[in-house]
Length: 308
Image (tube, rainbow, N blue to C red; front, side):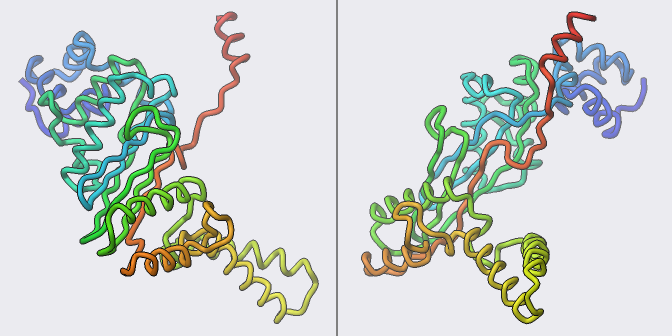
């Protein structure tokens, strides 16, 4: 009997896409014979996920949940929007979101090992879902935010079910003010964030590489004006300031009134409540953002299928 090492289990998992515990069981059942273990998993239907693991999963659902002064958001992807309407898939996203909230983490690898209601790990249930539903799926990212006092308010855009949708937003307001008033205000801010998609809360949170890229673009444009270097420098700095303002939450114009900066709206709300109000943090997850989707030629695929 071959020694069943952690590496052997990992190799089997990498090849089949089955869960870690299922791979270990398969090796035990086949006395450590790797190929026999692959066949064992296939006969159990647990290797079905392997064929789908290379397919792009850019659809799915964002889940958001809050409790007290804490909130969490999760993105689980699938290949098609159709799966997002599947009750099993929706239930999985909802349960995982609540697990993340209870654990207060954003570490995906840690979340995958957590136990779900049926006694299996998140990762193993996900693998089962891939085999049952028939599409590649992935637990992509998670985030948790909180405040000492105040509110963490959720908002879901294009809602598919309570707490599940295409865009999920959490807004954390630190304030001793009236919680109902804060919650209503945070909901407005969340709607703004969903629509305006800020890159960061303020300038300090913007990736320096992004700013430098904008600076380089602005410099090239300014040089084309033919103006003196000192004027070009001022034009560039003005363009960069405008970019930062338009792409940071506190610098953006509030979409609700279309004229006031968010920072001024927050100051006005603090004055109205008679208590300090601070946007402590926010999360905005948009389904599939940043995922490179495969482009397919449907006509060519049909022609190939007919010809084949």
